[in-house]
Length: 557
Ligand code: TEU
Ligand code: CA
Image (cartoon, rainbow, N blue to C red; front, top):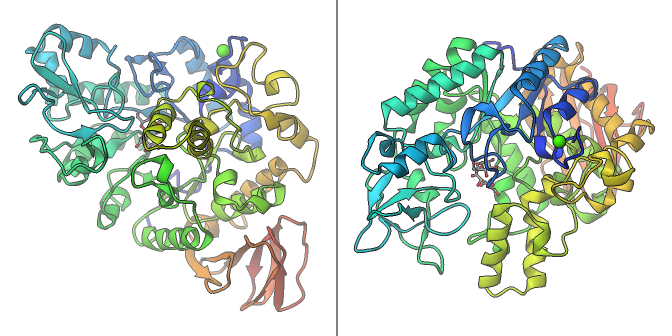
């Protein structure tokens, strides 16, 4: 594999609104981020991904951009952004931004001009189509509920949106629009950005016939993602995008790609793939419900293990993936992937170890490094997220009671990951001196950065060790490029794998079960590299793993 500058890096996702508020308005901001760069450096972070900070009406928390060239005033100024770039550079850290180019905000100048002249040049930046017999052009359900087609006032036309109606989809067929997007991307790269996380990008190629699909819900609609799934040709756009932008800057790109055909993986992340890497969401999609969150299955250990193993084996044939346990769209990993008895510091360290040492770039989501968990939600009014409110209503219309619908959202809500970062045990977890825009998780007195700084055995200090191990001169090569080999697949509740390079073999073994397990070691132990219970040595061939224990061993000859 040809080496790239980003292969051995560790990344961290910041959700700016919830990271740290510096001026007491209850909203996290750039100053807050700048003040924590040393904290992130200490954790071993190289690449920082900022969820959108562009000007936006925040209908979907900044994923609805109204001006690609300005910083949202809630977050700060362009001057402060430049300062962030410079301060990151001083610390040998890289900043990447979110790139949301499947859609923009309905308040973007382009869309405003399109509405003003629905037959004009700007209308073709979007999908404007005539209705059929007074109905929308087709029967697609948007990601956030309701029809994808919204009437264009004063006309017999509709515009297309896969997400909220305030997020009209951009028409990638239009070369002038594409050129404007490329210019914008290059403008940011010229500033010194290291690359982008690319939002919802698989959706840019539509079936221009917009055919009706077999309804898959009581609303008579079919999920719009199914139209996108069936259409060919997105690759040409992605190549054109890459050639005109990222490639010229050797930029790092990590794309959010759902619904890809597995046989296309090498086109996406192979040697000459469209992107540097994509996120591995395979374990997360295990809890996709057939109709929504209300019929989402629980994740069981065997499926989870099998999914991760399959994905690792698949990906290493062609490239490097980006591994997460959570992000701003997902519930907290500790609450989701760990059984109840393991939702404690030991279990949290175990899950982190298994994830961070996989083959691929680890992306740590803010708060993950202290083991933040899902919040307890008592009222639908406590939520802010548009997706959660839709899913709550969907559950109610499917016949669930308010209490049941809330339980569904408590488990699945994106707001679980968006509660403010818990910095200390003082008011509002030290996130703000004002009123936080979203409630603080009530467990902040137990789980917060300040407490963990002072405790050598804390989750935070363990994550520091974990990341440092991955990046140490001794193990960097094997953890970056080493082959992934599953191990002990027949042992119940044990998630284990080897990472193998020409001259090293590392075993990572974790016991997710409630009871102790014993595994027979197949290689002599050269060294215990890491243990979440402080084991220093192993003398036996039979290795007993307690419940929630994880161990990382360098094997000898
Ligand atoms: O997410 C795209 C996407 O497919 C999501 O709808 C995802 O399926 C859902 O959030 C899971 O609950 C991206 C962003 O990550 C998300 O925050 C945005 O809301 C969305 O695009 C629209 O830009
Ligand atoms: Ca603020």
